[in-house]
Image (cartoon, rainbow, N blue to C red):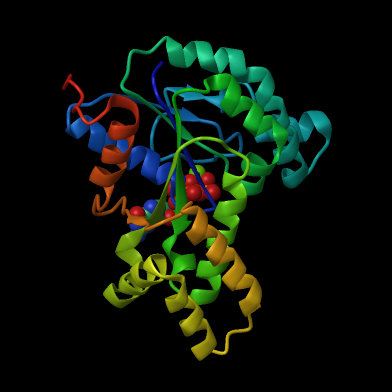
Length: 255
Ligand SMILES: Nc1nc2c(ncn2[C@@H]2O[C@H](COP(=O)(O)OP(=O)(O)OP(=O)(O)O)[C@@H](O)[C@H]2O)c(=O)[nH]1
Ligand SMILES: [Mg+2]
């Protein structure tokens, strides 16, 4: 089965741009990927999706048909997506590509916490899935939101039993010292707890320690990969992760 790679992250974390730039990167390396847009509310996409949920479900039509505002319509659209699974699956299977890159809705909680999405991920194929979780660099550079971001990622991971890679997106927006801080915090939770204490941050330190301790002892998040759609930083790391997961250590045959 052609691997399905889901790009998941908070609103504006760079999912759609990464789907676009990673596809381009793969193509430049002579590998082949198709793109799937699962965001019914996307107004603009930086790529032309091969498969697009908006062909059958658009936020605009859900708002009209169900007499809802944009937020209510997002919820209904997320649930309606399950009805599209067979069509999407058939379409994906009709392509002969190395990877299927799947862009998910901006509202992370809709994709991550509603049963319809886990159903959809399962139905699209259980064995060959991976999830790229985008940590927005803007939210990772200060210690308080670093902890909240890790917590959110962990709660998303409780919903999906699939291999995942945590990446810090838009790395070109980080100053070198900000990047070093994130690397330092990733390596050792005591470093971030020290920095939080030093800032006398208004954050529940006990709770933060428990969250970070859980992440560390379960080894679920580990060290982040930094990526940028501007500079192509980290594209190789995403590829290596997927490659060893799906194809062993062998390189794909170039097309
Ligand atoms: N500097 C920089 N900007 C980026 C990068 N990736 C995305 N952006 C910008 O960040 C903004 C959001 O990017 P999107 O790709 O639309 O993010 P998204 O997660 O798909 O957004 P939603 O689907 O609306 O949640 C856009 O203005 C992008 O141009 C990056 O690597 N570097
Ligand atoms: Mg998007």
